[in-house]
Length: 446
Image (cartoon, rainbow, N blue to C red):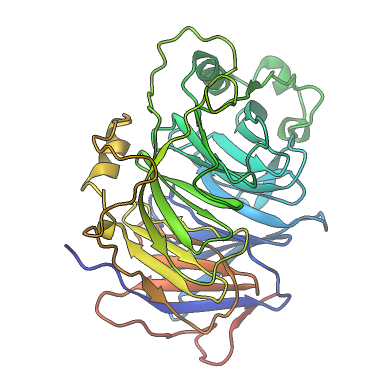
């Protein structure tokens, strides 16, 4: 087994206004530059580039300050304009409005409105860069199409959900929320497929829209744009409240398995939902009532716990872990500024090449492993302790992300600091550079 990547602290930046940063995301769509990332918090969006060959490894290339003084961005996600290939950055937060920033020109070009409360997370579809999922405090997850600026589908139901993650195939959506539940929604029923297909194949550039001013075409609230009716999905195909006993603020797919974490526990649970993930629906369902009535007798709720990844000092809401692009590294921060890093080869049930096959085939395969509900792995399946990245940071780390080539890790914190770590196989962990190269003064962003 190869040695796990080692990371050393390469750079730190801190803002004088002490803005709390909540979200970070690398642009994995850029084929030429793996090291562009965005950070959001308060009214601010920072776009930066990392380059260890330069005297100063980190360079801020773009900043954006929202006009609304009540805005507080919690999340961000990258995509690409399918027509011209321009990088797009979606940001959202307290005002419930999703802003779409064209970073090639450095301005917000579109806005998506429809949610009735704060937006906690946004994710783009893994195969369709124009499709965006957003999860809100209004207890719903919306699927948007950036081509039409309309809502394609709304996933709701009792208690609703605020944290989405999309299966690598693009056929299933996992969600979690403050109801202590994890739910799985299918995107494969005929009515949802039709809604998605229609939105993707629609042509917003009709002869009538060509006569509109550029300002009207960019506004999602333009009265000249006839809104299409969104599909409403009331019931998931899987739901359980027995796995966690507190607010679940992060859930991620790992093949057909799921990782999730709740506010009361300093651990990430890897588990398998007892539900058949069938990508092709042969039924003739034409309604949007998917999964039947939300009762235990009608809904899948069993699961098998594979293992638990434990760390310390993490018992608050809104700490989100991150995966590397190849799913080989998993990292999370905690409330005292530490980063915990696992090599997923050390996790039981890992099948070499599994994730790569999923990406290539877009097929869902049933696991041959059968366990009783709630049964943990045997003691012989030892989980190695995580690598701990320590620094002078003492603040809560809200989110972590990896660059596409896993060379860099960036974490964002409550105290307005951004910490950048670079992989270094040949050296031990050490704190090296702060700010503009001085060991005393951090780089200040005006």
